Structures are given as structure tokens and as C-alpha cells.
Amino acid sequence: MYVIWGSTYLAIRVVVESLPPLGSAGVRFTFAGLVLGAIVALRRGPAALRVTRAQLRGAGIVGLFLLLFGNGSVQLGERDVPSALAALIVASTALWIVLYRRIAGERVEGTVLAGVLIGFLGVAVLALPRGITGEVAPVGLLFILVASAAWGWGTFMSKRLEMPRDALTSTTLQQLIGGLALLAAAVLTGERIDPAAWTSRSLVALTYLVVFGSLVAFSAYTWLLVHVPMSKVSTYVYVNPVVAVLLGALILAEPITSSIVFGAILVITAVAFIVRTQAPPAPDEAIDMGDAPPTVRSPS
Image (cartoon, rainbow, N blue to C red; front, side, top):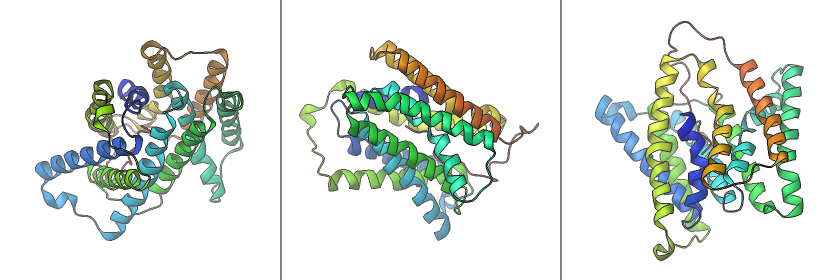
């Protein structure tokens, strides 16, 4: 899960080299949702996919924020933003969740709020100088910032909306609704379908995202939720950006400058502190998947 979800930022960067950003994301999640739905129906029967209207609405809202506004914005942003920089900024999703909790009136400890401030300072170190100098297109950076805020909101709302109790059913609906919304957005924004411009490199990267990023990694995530304490599972939140930075440098020759290292240290340290502080106590036994169905957590 560390390696695959950490590598999806690199894969997205390669996909958008020649494929339409919203359309390719729509194809990815719609296809993955159909496959996952078929697996659920075959293993548990079609009844496993039945949900109430409230549960469908909850899954739809979360799917739209995580995939349409979250993943869609990453796809648009990575046309101009290096994959490592995108991954580090998206790591601030955990900071947004704490911010939303505070705005909603929940009590948040002062040390956690201090961690949020440090994390956003790291985001500023990563984004502002590059946007001001024109090293990275400001619009691309804005899309990545919107993505992290949207993922934070989708995750925040997933705990406050009625969701399907079965994790795989919930994810199936989120991917189908989010994927179809992405396809609709591609049509409405006039994305061109030009197969002659598609490269084999981008098509291979899209296939990787569908098979590994959306199906294999989430299956691993679901298995871990059942067999491993949540405090350990949640480590992916701050390990993935490190993997993304290393892969971006090794495969795409993306530079690792001193300011990127400094900003990364601030963001990842703050996120690690917040995740570890807010994580529930690790149980001795496996958790019950029915207690809190997970959303599509991958920010890519």
C-alpha cells in the first residue's frame, strides 16, 4: 500500500502528459467501480449492493468530494506541478480535517492546532516561492490546494453522513458516482478525445492506476483495516509523500531542492504528529468493519 499509493502521483503525472485529465480519471474510477461491484455481487450476492436512499446520498456526496473535486483537481494540477510537490501538498489533507472539525465547533487541543499551523507553514514554503517566481504555474498549484481541501472535506463528511455499512459497497458507489461525475465534467469542459495524441506511456500509467491504484491497493487497505490496528494503518498518510518524492526523483528526475526538503519536513512532521495524536487506541483484536466503513482514502 505504501509503494502503490505513493506511486500514483507519478502515474498521474505520466497519464496527463497525453490523456485528458478529467476523462482519464473518470474512466479509471468508473471501470474500477464496475469491477469492484461485480466482485461484491459475485462473492456476496446482489443484495450486498442494496443501500438506503440516505446511504446512497452519503456515498454520493463523499464520492464527489474525494474523486470529482479531489482526484479531478490533482489530475488538472499535475499537468503543471511535479508529482513529488503535488504529493507533499496533498499530505495537508489531514490538516484540513482538523480545521473543519474546529470550524464545526469540536474541541481541538492546542498542541494539535499548533501542528496544523506548522503543517500549513510547510505548504506555504513548498508552494508560494514557486508560484511567485513562475517556476510552477500558480493555477496548477491552486488545483492541488483545492484537491487537499476537498479530500479533507470528503473525509470529514464521511463521518457525519449515513454511509453504506459494508466497506466494499461504500467504495463501489463512491467510485461509480465519482467516476461518472468526472466523465460528465470532461464533457462539460470540452475535453478533446484525440487518440492520435495518446502515448503508450500514458495508457500504461492509466492501466496501472486502475488495476493497482484503485483495486489492488484498496483491497490491501481493506484487509489491513480488519487485521491491523488503525494506528498502524494510518501511517500511510505520511509515508506515501516520502515514497512519491523518491519515485519522482528516481524515475522522472524531479529535483529535490533544499526548500522542498524543508517544506516536506514541516508538512510530514505535522501530519505524523496529528495522525498519531488523533488515532484511536490500538485494539488487541481486529476491528469490526461494520463500525465505520472507510471511504476511498487514497488521495490519488
